[in-house]
View 1 (tube, helix red, strand yellow):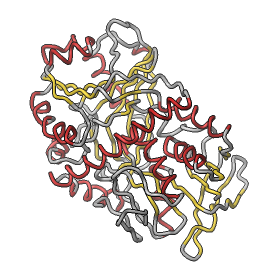
View 2 (view 1 turned 180 degrees about the vertical axis):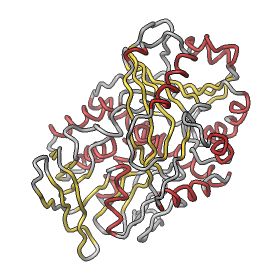
View 3 (view 1 turned 90 degrees about the vertical axis):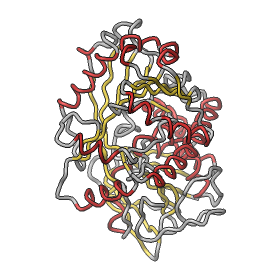
Length: 434
């Protein structure tokens, strides 16, 4: 079967890899000149099953009210005259109930664990190098209330098989000695030894090269302008190449993995996708003082930041800004990240050589991605992964390849569409309350 994958980020390339393994003739289409050039370019680097508590949780509404008007707030809403943003915000608030939060955590842990296992197997099979570290992920807290609030979701994750242990400040310091500077303020931590980190951009480019060697075609520099429907299925994709030449691309099946831009392509088809761009920031610093720099991947839940060591670089990423498709770098938010890094690990990185980046993360209101078949018989979706695209990429790619091939996925997750063994259906409108 001929399959076109739209998008050459993490989700698109992993989908292409597993589709090719099923024997399909695969073409990947992307507007950028190289794979992983947008949201997968400079993310936080964590493969973090333990990061399964969604932004939408019972404590979120009060925090958001506290953060209103603060330019450097971890979660910043810039209200626009955009009905999609308002609808997304209302759905976000609906996902903040305890019951929905527990349900969403279960979905994220199951997919995350499966995806991490799939990544490990892929790494063994292909020998891909991407600055991988398998030292676990440490969530640390400098606020006693935040630390106390972490106990319940950590317990739920342990019940689901994610061994996120609650540990003391002293044990956290033994795991990551670089936290010594803030020891007097360290309330405690949680630690998940099975979690990992690595360079998502390098992984994607390496996997894309492997895909090409196995026969996958990449049409880079091709901007998809429309999906055209006939008789309840996609007839062709319209795209323009780098020279502006118009093309019609046809296949038997289509996988949409265009992140935050997925809703824009689906709207003319009568499919309302609950995905909105959440602009995230990252800073990459050369290591300046190896003794002061962290080795273990870290999560600062209070400030919504993650820290990863990528060889001789420090990557710090996080925060979210809901401001439509604007990708402008906000200097105040960049400086706030650097300030927190210096507060935690003074002198560890060369701040004078800081590289700032921002990308649009495709966020669903409950953080649960949208994977499966749409109402159109030959159109499949692999999008909406928000802050967990790297964590869920391999499991999502393997699952969508099985769905396209008419097989049931191997993981218990709320896939959409007619999937063997699943009783989940979807009409013209997808909602976050699946």
